[in-house]
Image 1 (cartoon, rainbow, N blue to C red):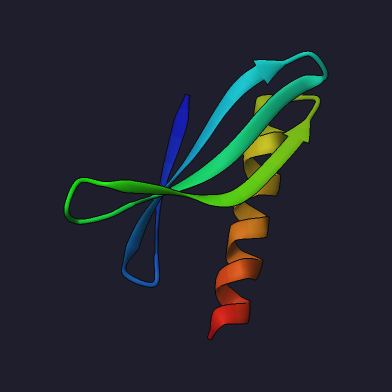
Image 2: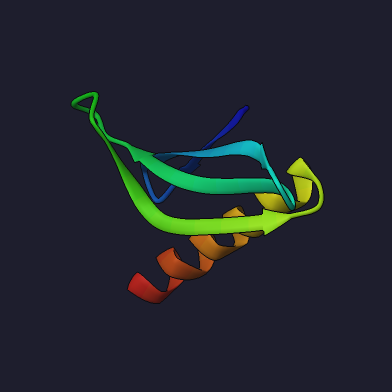
Amino acid sequence: MAKQLELNGRQYWILSEPNSEGWRAWVTEVRDDGGSEEMGIDATAETRSAADELAERKLRRLLKGKN
């Protein structure tokens, strides 16, 4: 599953999959040229929505720190 976000004019996808401890989510930036880059953000939680929310919070904190 994936959740798409647009922040600061850039596109990000939060991708998630089940793992042995619940769910794992990570963030990928999708560039205009069709390429992508993992952001180095990884989150785990008991549910998919919790893992996705945690990954999004980490992304927002990372982007806030770059401004």
